[in-house]
Image (cartoon, rainbow, N blue to C red; front, side, top):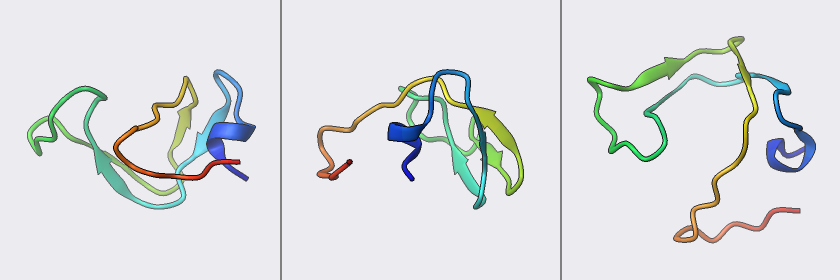
Length: 58
């Protein structure tokens, strides 16, 4: 299952691993970063494909 191919707008997504991220379009800075923790629920809005990274999605 892929979040990109299986989720619809406003679908809940449960975080399965801790990670830290900044808002899209913002250069990473620990001062503005947010930590996402296991079990936290977020909601799918849309995806962003980075054309500089080769990935194969179904």
